[in-house]
View 1: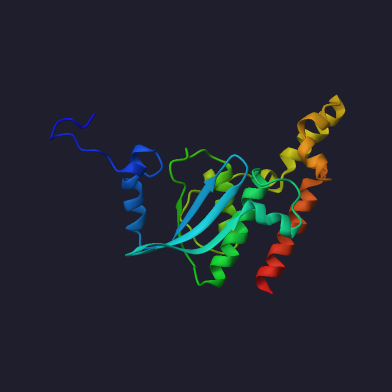
View 2: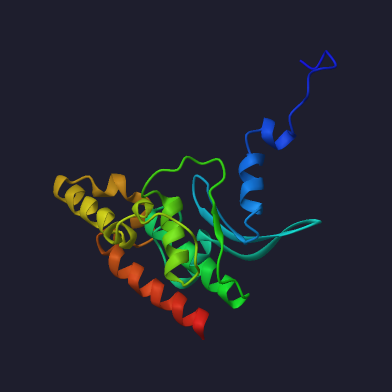
Length: 195
């Protein structure tokens, strides 16, 4: 591989596909904190990161597993959970003095209406200014989880609700009333963050 003197080995994080340094530099040039949204197979992570010379500094952080403390039994990887995680992180960032930021989705593909942009919508609704295009944000119905509720009702008619939503049902959560649970958790987050 690196046998001649002309070959230059790329940075390790670039080789591993973790960091796009050109995009990172462009984000850092804005001199605003970054809203870093990452998704795993089970959770959503939203961080507000500030740049310092010796390294990045985490200003505020929220992890979708934390939503269980607020009464969210529907898992951490769906679209409503992404919105609530973004909202929770933004409320914490506001307490730390953040008023504006710039979105960093890393190397994830930019897909209109995705969980990444649902987290962005939560940040925006909490009152932090982030430059964006309104077309990329998911619909209000999807943010409240009404698509999950209608799908659950359809599966219940077919008799396959238990197979598709076994994790929710095992936790005692009815997927047909996810919208009501979303509203109550959102109120709890607002009350705890403001109080």
